[in-house]
Each structure stands twice: as structure tokens, then as C-alpha cells.
Image (cartoon, rainbow, N blue to C red; front, side, top):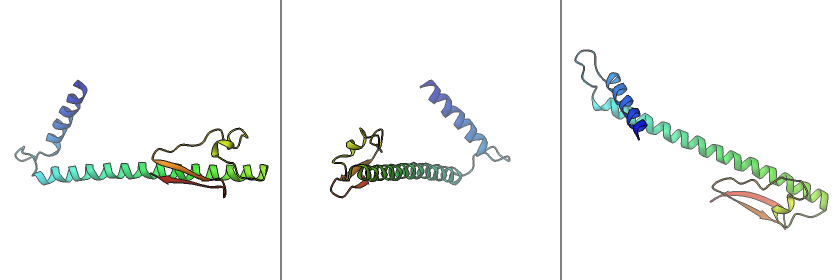
Length: 118
């Protein structure tokens, strides 16, 4: 709690120096503060977008890994695995990759693996 108060104090003092004019020491009009808040929100949105893109990329990569493992299982056994867990004992994968916010759908009749957003 003390650390948070110190951070807020530092931000307030830094803001006072950034938004004051040299002539009279007054702060700039509220529009400067508003622009800063708008930029801050835009940065937060960009960070969320980047995180979402990373998660999507991980799901796509894991989907390709499982598809390859299913095909390797098929080549070795002449059939598709009944469940994705059947890939583990044969050493095709060490575990079934999990991605937060995604479900793994598998069709044992066709061997199709698909990660889908919840």
C-alpha cells in the first residue's frame, strides 16, 4: 500500500512538472491531460491485442503439432487414435497442449484436430 502511494506521488509530481508552463507555473489546459489519458488507453488496448495475438498463435502452433502427431499415429497404426490421449503412450506427443480460452476438438473417424475459441 505504501509503495502504491509512493508511485502515485511520483506520478503526480512528474505530471506537475510536465504540464506546467514556464511563464506562470500553471498547468496546461485539461486537453493535454485528456490526450495523455487517451494515449494510455490506446497503449492498453494494443497490449491486449498483442496478448490475444500471442494466444491465437500458440493455439495455431499446438493445433499443427497435434495434427502431425495424429498423422504419424495413423502411419504407424493404420488407423486414427480413438482419443488424443492415445498419442502419449506411443511417444507421438509428451502431453496434450492446453491453450487458455480454447477447446480442443478431435474427430477420431476423420483424424481432424481443431482448436476453437470458447
